[in-house]
Structures are given as C-alpha cells and as structure tokens.
Image (tube, rainbow, N blue to C red; front, side, top):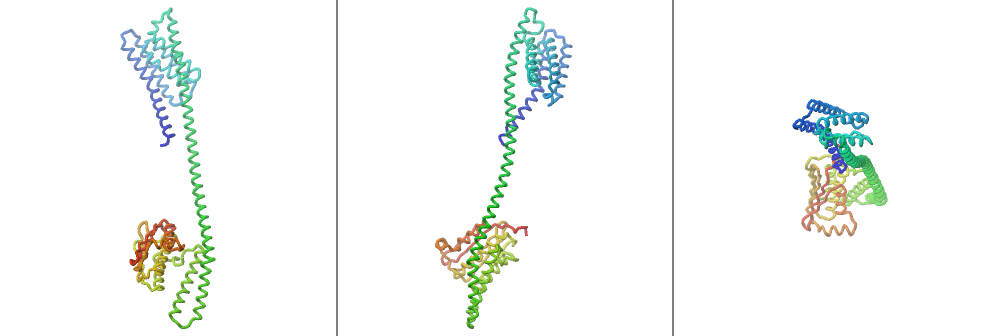
Length: 423
C-alpha cells in the first residue's frame, strides 16, 4: 500500500471515530446528568426534569436523522442550536447537574455553526455553564449577579480561544486533505504518463531492433552477393567446363560431379540467404527430416557412416530455432569431415517439454579445446566460436567435449519455441 493510500485510510478512520463520538456522546452526557440528578437528596421537580430530558433526547435524535447533510444546512442548524440552547438552559434551571449535558453546546456550536455564530453559541453555552458552577439559579442573588457574569466572561474567553485554536487545526486538516487529493490526482496522472512512456519506449525499442536487424540483413546480403555467391557461381562454371573436357576417368568424373552438386546447392542457399528465406532443405520439411537428409547426403559424399536418431514428441518449432539446429548439424558434420578422421558419426535430436537438444558424436581423433579456441580467435574462422554464437543468439547453450584420441561430442540445447500460429 502506498503512503498516500495509508494517509487517506488513516484520515477516513479518524473521521469515522469522530462521527461516532459526536453522535453517542450527547446521549451519554444526558443519561449521566439525569441519573445524578435523580439520585441527589436535594429536592428536584422530577416531572419537569424528565419532560425536558425526553425533549432533549428527541431533539438529538432529530439531529441524527439529518445524517451527513446537517453540516451543509446553515439555517436549519441555527434553529437546531437555538432549540438545544433553550433545552440546556431549562434543564440547568431545574437541576444544576444537567450542566454535564450542557457541555454538548460547546461541541455542537463548533461543529454546526459557522463564522461569528460559532462564537455566539460558545458564549451562550458558557453563560449556561456559569449557572452550573454557582450551584443553580437559586444560588445567584441580586447582589451577586456580577459573580455569574464574571464566571461567564472567563468561560467565554476560554471558549473563544479554544475555538480559534481548533479552527486553525481544522483548517490545517482541510489543507492536508486537499493536498492528499491533489497528490492522488498527480499520482494518477504520473502513473498514466509512466504507462504511456513505457509503451512508447517498448515501441521505440522494437522499431530500433527491427531497423538494426534489417540493416544487418541488408549488409550481410550485400556481402554474400558480392563474395560468396559470385565465387560459387564462378566455381560452378569452371567445374562444368572441366567435366566436359575430362577423359573417361570414372572416379575423377564422380568427384567433379559431386563438387558441381555441392557448388550448386551452396549457390542456391546463398541466394536464399540474400532473399532472407529459410534454408531450402527446411522448406516443406520437418526439422528431423531436414537433418536426416543433410546427414545422408553428407555420409554419401564423405564415405563416413552417419545416422540420426530422434526422440521425444517431434513438433514444428520457430523458424529461427530450426535454422539454428540445422546449421549446427551442418557445421558439426563439416568439422568431422575436415578434422576428425572418423569412421562413424551419431546424431541425436531430442524433443523435450521446453528444450530441444542436438547431440553429434564421432569416433575420430578428437582435439584440444583450448588450441581450437585459440585458432578460431587467431584466424577469425567460424568454427566452434561461430557455432556457439549462433546457438546463444536464440538463448541456447553449446557444450563441447573432446580429447585427443577420444572423439568429440557436441551438444546444442535451445528453447522449444513453437512455430508461429501454433502449427
């Protein structure tokens, strides 16, 4: 809960307590005054006391029925206070102990009267209370009326001083409530502005990311078109010319034919990359089928036994995820062909609930990981570092285990993000 909300709640609780006290206190004072008066041995006109007590109770009940509207009805409250003053004066005239109830006049004068009338009500109540202090009307003689006036004057001054102090306190509380209201309004506007700014910030980040991706894609497309694609096209032309001029050597012709096929496939892939299209082998195929096809063709070309095993619930994944795993398989197989001198390669594609893992294991010569990392850093090749970067780009992890003479195991784990549209 915010500080503002706590202050508002505390203020509301204080107002509820004040309302309860203001409503109940006059009845308690009236009951106490009546009880003490009836228990006193001094003679009291009981019928008059009870009649005025019932009238005062009914008058208070009428005030309670006005509810929250009583403070906004100035003229009606003036009438109410005049009636309350008359009832208090009558009760004190009957028995001075009703001064206990007459104290209500102070409270109601401050609450229900406004401006100068508030002080008039306080002075009137002080004069009534002065009769109580002297012990009743019977104790005030013609020669001692000045004593009653002096006590009333002191009470009036004290009441006016107290009212002025309470009035300043109430004004301070009113300003505090207004400040809380303004603070609440400011906080609401601030929250709305922050929410709007967050939306704009997210939109700007998205636009900046899209612009960066587009710019990088265009740069890579230009680089591929100007270097790799043109080089492959030249290689393909030269190999085709060599095939036409070669003799009948079947082995040589087979190697040239394989080179032509590889160059043609690489040229097709380069053009699809320039056009921001996914790998052709994934077009219309599932990831497991695409990796199996790549593995089969790699095995035929390299004369190394290779097989793919698929476990788990095979399902369509996001295009970036499938491309990452396919490229990881291609790079791992290419590394085996170039460096491992292996006889067998096993690939395992494992579908789990929130992860997909591709494991590639060979029985080759293995290598020293530290030397391999140093070579990648020194020569700027794609190699293992590039494979790791590709996997990490989709929030995945790449683990490599290898030792000289013990083969190599590569494991690429990526999130199992479903294909768009839930397909």
